[in-house]
Structure formats: C-alpha cells, structure tokens
Length: 304
Image (cartoon, rainbow, N blue to C red):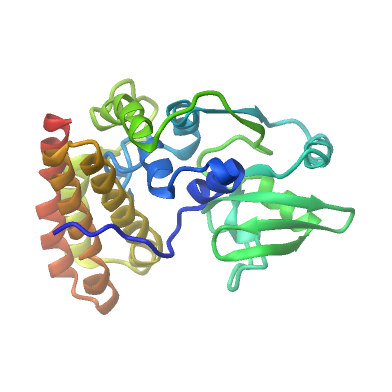
C-alpha cells in the first residue's frame, strides 16, 4: 500500500517556490516532481551518493520546472557582491525574492552551522538593511534574521559544487492556467530524459548512475561505511530521496500511471528502509536493500 507523506524534510527549493507562488501554488509534491529530482540515482566521482538523476543538479531543472507548472520568473546572478546586494534591495521593493543556492554552513541562525559544509540551500528573502537580512528559511525558520555579511558569504556559493553566485529569481508570474494533473503530465518528458541520462556530460571521473550507483554504494557501505558517508546518508540523502520517490509515486498514480507509480513507491520504501540500519550500524542490511533498489531504475525507465 502506498501512503502519501506529509511532514518535514529537506525540500528547500520546492518549499521556496511554493512561497513565491502564493495562493496559486500547487502542492509541494507536484513542484518537486516537476524538478525531475525523483528520477534516478548518482554516485558523483564514485564517492558522493544522491538519490536524484545522473548529472542533475537543482539549477538544471528549474526552467523546465517553471515551464511545466505554468510559471515564469526573471533570473539574475553573478557580478560583484555590491552589485548583487543592490539588485536584491531593488527587487525587494516589489515583494519577496527567491534566492540560492546558498552555502548552508554560513547560515548561522541554524544550530550547528559554523562554517562551510558544501551543502546547498534556498530561501525566500523578505527584507534587507545595512546590518541584517530577514528571510523565510524553509528548513524550519520563518522570519529568520542573519547578519548581512554572513548572508552575502553564503550567497557567493564559493564552496558549492554547482550553482551561479548571487543567483536570484524575481517577478514570478503565472503564464498558463494548469491543473495539478496537467502539471504532472507536462513534467513527464523531462523526467524521462533525466532517467534515460540523455545529453549528460561533464561528470567527474568514476561517477556512476542508477543501478550501477546503487550497487557500488552497497559495496562501499558493506566494506565499512565511514563517518562522513554515514552522516550524509542519514541526515540528508535518505530523507530527501525517500520523500522524492514517494511524491513521484503519488503524482504518477494521480495521472493513472499505475505501473510506474508502483515502482516509485517501491523505491521510496527501499530508500527509506536504509535509515535505521545506517543509524544503528547495521551496514549489511543497508547494503542488501541497496542491491534490491538497483534494478528498479531500469524498470521505471521502461514503463515511463
């Protein structure tokens, strides 16, 4: 039985989009589905596992996401810190701004953040003055304040593996009236391309995709899961990966793609089942579940 999940989790850009869409926002599950994030797995450089498509990163999916949802926005970025701050202040005169990626480790309003951790984040900016910024941080911190210098360092994104420095989206506007079912259908072509790894290039040497990534990760964990890998898995990768797959199952079922929905639901269960074993150190069980996950990506590609 598939049960839709509603709750907390690292869905920063989908939640930030929903805030920018306001009363016209579709469900966060539909927004995340439209990013294509549930459709694949990658082991970047043979070391960093992520339950999202091979070669994908959030910035690559955003234009397709907005198009499928029937929205548009103005994107700006790069330049100097002073230029970026001036752009942000000018934009906030007309309403909130969608900002990111940010280096999460510089967001010192979040407990435990003391410096760069090479983790990306997205927020909705509300106000800025000469000393601090005011934001809705979808990590669970509405109306969070942060010293301006810390925010600007985070916004430069110097320690992230992807992303445009000082990137910001403003002037969100609805350009097509679509139901959620129409949004899901409109998202399928991009999802298929990502799952099939069409046009992917520039990946680091040793990177693996989908089933091969799951199998290699299983071997890494069973051979001895180091502290860094374990922390990445239990604090981020499993949580977001299981939720993405579960949302994919929900969305696919809504448009009658029952076979694909069943496969995605199975992926969600397998990814979610990694959490307890890795927390308690039962690495053999985690490896076994990953080996079960490996063939599901090809099965999903075949039925989409």
